[in-house]
Length: 148
Image (tube, rainbow, N blue to C red; front, side, top):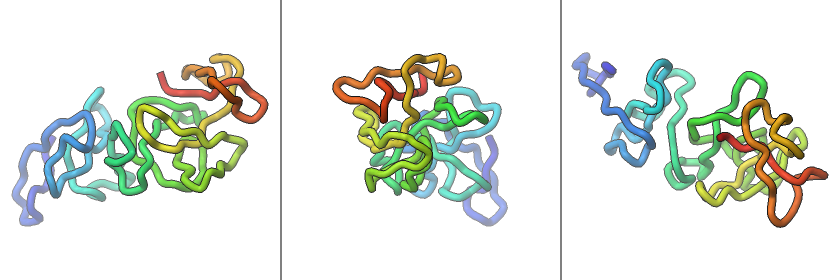
């Protein structure tokens, strides 16, 4: 993928990546690129409009939240990207509060607190998986929808 390198019009190839921690200083965002399946491209933060940075753990993100992207119906999908801490579905909930009836859960694999949708069965998750919570519940449900 071609990218502006230094602002002088010189172009260079952006390195592909799986997560932002693989990118060099100055291009520390492993940006999700349409058509580039399974990988991202190392770009500077804010290099593209609506840029999403791939992550594996919360410490890769300024907000501290690494969470799934969502599909058009609001169901969690991959890849994991840096998200704001605003309590919205599948965003961070460092305050412990979620909007829209979600549950603020600590995701062990990312170390992030994320607002997840409650569920009883995977059929409620639109292609994602209803992961049982042990112990505990999400509202009145026994699980939460997670990207598979």
